[in-house]
Amino acid sequence: APSEDHELKKLACLYWETVDKHGEDGKLLPETILVCNALLQNLKHPNEYIRAYSLRFLCRVKEAEIIEPLIAAVKENLEHRHSLVRRTA
Image 1 (cartoon, rainbow, N blue to C red):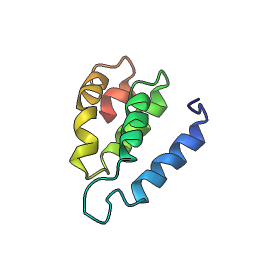
Image 2: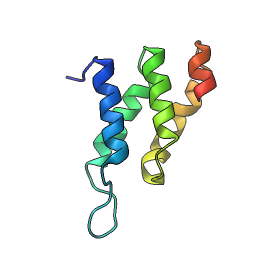
Image 3: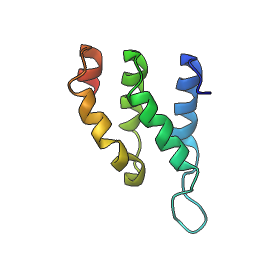
């Protein structure tokens, strides 16, 4: 089951930022699909702080293969009811 611990989610984002996302062949590792799914869930999370933190994390991701499937969720956050989420998106 996904964790609801906010500190754990922040630590996971820090880990994802530092871990090598490419294999020896230069291609994106298959595990990044799980990261992408977790980010998608965080971008749709009911808590506005988790959404905002995930949006700030996406600003530091340089791999287009991770960001492309999340574009629709980021656009949805542009119209979120909380100004923190809208401003971060």
